Image (cartoon, rainbow, N blue to C red; front, top):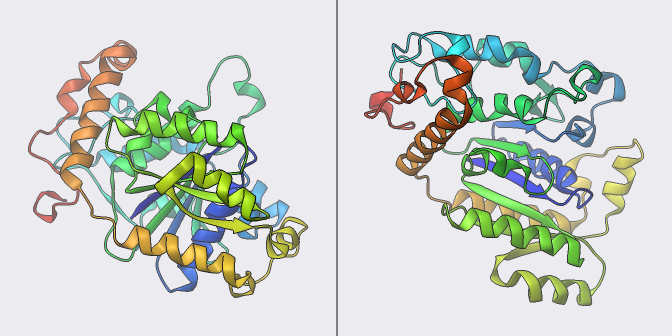
Length: 319
C-alpha cells in the first residue's frame, strides 16, 4: 500500500509518518519511507543522528540515474532525458518493488529506524531564485509511478505541507491519504482545501487528530472533520523525548497513541487496490504536463510515451 501523510506545516505530519513507519516495521512488514517535504526532518524523526541525516543521498540529485534505470528498454521512451516526472511505465520499463534490491535502492535508500528511507534532499543554496522544490519531488512521483507494492508491503511518504502536492498528479499516487490535523481553525482549513481538491479524483482523505489535550479538542475535530476523523493522538512524552534526542523503541509509545497507529494500519489493510484507476490517472496527468510544458522542454510529443495496453500491477504486463 502507498500511504501519504499530509497537513499544515507544524501539525506533526512528519512525526506521524515516522511513528507509523516504525509501527509497521515492528510488525515485520517491509516498509519504504520517503521524505518529500522541503524541510527534510523524517530521518531525524525515525531516529537518525544529525550526521546520518546530513549524509543521506538525495533523490533529486540522482534523477538522471533514476530515469535511466526505470526507462529500461521501453521503446516508447526515446531517451532518459525525454522522461519527465509524470512519465508512466509501459512494456519494457523497469518496475520497482518494495521487497527487493535494485540499483535505485542501492544508491539512494538507507536503513533508519527499522525502515528503508529515501529522501528528496534539501532545497540547496544554488537553487535559490532559479528553481522550485517540485523539481526535486518529481523524483518521488516518477518512483511511485513505477512502484508495484504487494500485499503486506508499505511505502509511507511524508509530503510537502499544505496543498503543494496539487501542483502535479502526486496526490493521486496513494492508496490512502492521512491528513494530520491540530484542533485549530488553520489546520482544519488545510483539511477542507485538501479534501476539496482530492474529491474530484476519488482520493479519500482521512483526518488524524494530533496534539489533542482534552474532549473539547476532540469535539472541535469532529465538528469540522465529521466521519473523516479516523482517530487522534494526545500529547506524548514519548514524542517529546524523541524530539530531545532520546528515541525509544516503538513499543514504549503510550498505549492509547499506539492504538491509533493500529487503527490506521487496519484502515490501510482494508483499502482495495485499484490499479486500472491508478494507471489511468497517471496517463491523464502525464498528458496535462506534456501539453503544459514538457513537450516544449523535451522537444517531443510525450503523449507517445503512454502505453495504452499497460496497467501497472497486472503481472502479465510487468517486465
